[in-house]
Length: 483
Image (tube, rainbow, N blue to C red; front, side, top):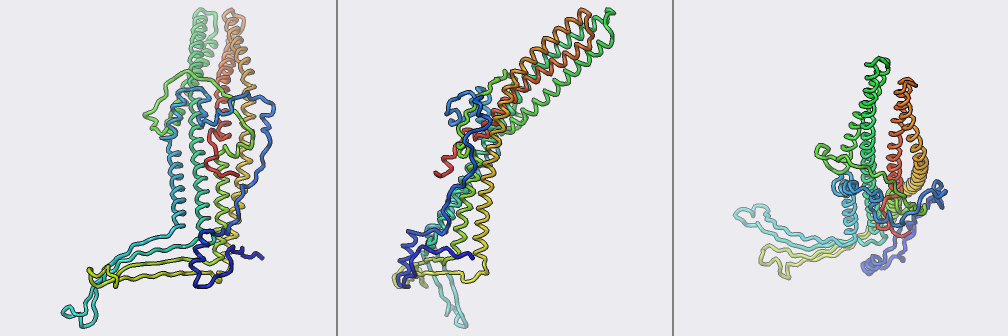
């Protein structure tokens, strides 16, 4: 059977001293809520996928500056990401939500202080037959200044402030997460667009080569030394390459539209000129795994949700104890305006009220147990988010390592495919092989070239995802209290 938590005030004082004792209690109020401790979470000593030391050394402050996208060395990307902060509507919504949370903190803090009101009024009244001719009719004027205050004896109001503060800090972390997500999405789409530009240039060059091959084949057919099927195969290969180029141009347009929306601009008024692709894949400094708890805004938000839920337990527990309120007023009332503020018209009052729930059929206990369950659920969500965060980092480390190893192999494969294509084309001209062999070599060479370009883009996307999973340049020091 659960028992009520014991209040930390001494036994009830005499009635004549109750006001003074409440004032002292308000200055040194005891809090009935459980003390908050940041929940523990499983944290590895090192990243498993980085244990082999494949990641080159990098400046330790590369991410602390916040502008993580500058690691890629692309000037146009820097300008586009800057627009996310001021124009992205998801970020704007998160900014507004954070401002709302801060306003709620101020509202809860205001409850700690007395409320002062100013009242005034005038009335005219009469009664019975004396009202005939104006007899028995009178005016009443009144003005008063009142104040009321609920001393925070059990810490309920301070716990409400603490809960609101924790929620505001969670909202701050949500803002950082929204900003980081938009920045990462824009950077990923931007490099995908640059990859599309590079691949389109590759296809245009390939189309020119196929056009020359078709002309050679057509000349051979006209001279009677080449079969019609060779011409048809050359036309098919050329048409497929042109179709791939058209599809790639359409894909680039969609990426451009997505970037426009992320930058907060209408796609119709936005454009990115074709430019050289900066194929830089930066080394991302990892740090130790424990720093992830401070760098990931979603982890910070989940931890602050636990703190807010913990404060709610104390708020519900305070219902076990009596509530006090002090009120007072001072004013004037008179039947004539000239006498309203005279000493004889003054009125004053001061009062103390106390309320204690005697029986509620276990409703208070149910609310306390519900708050405790909500805190336990918040702790479980926090630990799950931490585990998922470590998984996502390990996944991206593994992906980055695999893509890095693949790039050198893809380079060799592309070079070999280019040589094979050229040699078979030369042998075809000499009549040593059929055109089917040439078509097969051309298709293999084009696939190898495009795969290599796509691989570099995937490496950049993986680096962006790793930075995002590490929390970008955001630090939780401003949003979280010391552990």
